[in-house]
Length: 131
Image (tube, rainbow, N blue to C red; front, side, top):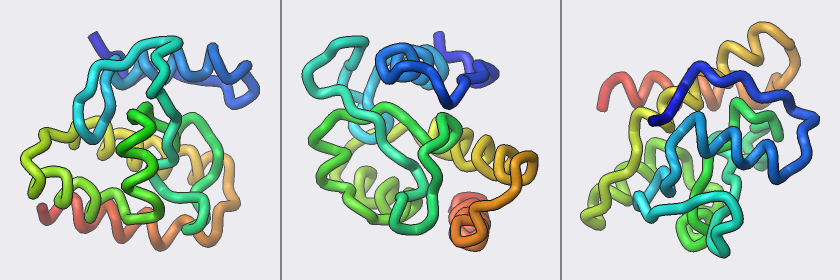
């Protein structure tokens, strides 16, 4: 069962960080729900707020996605990609995406910085609340 309260140190080795993110959010792709697990050949870490939009490489901004969904999403906003996945008949893990955005907002408030990501993140949370 996913545990959204798991705290993940940013300096962990990639394999351990990925395992903890899987434990936190569930062992499937957040977009298409494809079953994933540690060592799965299609497992990738994805930034919910894209790096291009100022999203940090922090565990609070990372979710597990299959490499296909990660590649197809590119830099599309999380809210727009959720809608696109649903339009295509998929059942994305909306709760995991929302929790990631909220975790990131809290982490930025606590650590500071990430000036470029703040307005983008606030806009995504507003749009999710309306959806």
